[in-house]
Image (cartoon, rainbow, N blue to C red; front, side, top):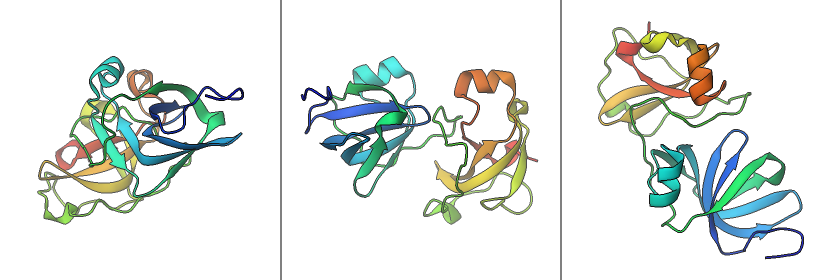
Length: 183
């Protein structure tokens, strides 16, 4: 610990920022940034208290190398006494993770072509606009195609989600949907 910050270099942490969650081992502390190794973006923590006490996370996207987190964006930080997640974890339910307002279209998840499409017609591509019928989420932009338990899904960003969605997930939270759930 240092006089100018409460962090311990070498300690594993889970970091909640205004828009995202990260796990990683703290390597360096700068006045404006934290440098993490063994880092992962946590798209969905699941129940927050359960994640903290058990180390179980619902959706994980590991970084191949280091990750730099802006200290100005940090909401809170907690020690992570569990093994750091290093494998991709995904699920078919709505993501509780967050995305930046200016969300960038991402490359499709590797292997998505081997999955089964539950929709009729062509599989939308990143950047396409779809209407999410399930739970009346409404218009959304496709961020990328993903493979979830053998099914092709779409990670989408709702453009004007209903109030319940904003309250539960945040105004700019992406979610995973499947072909049968879109128009």
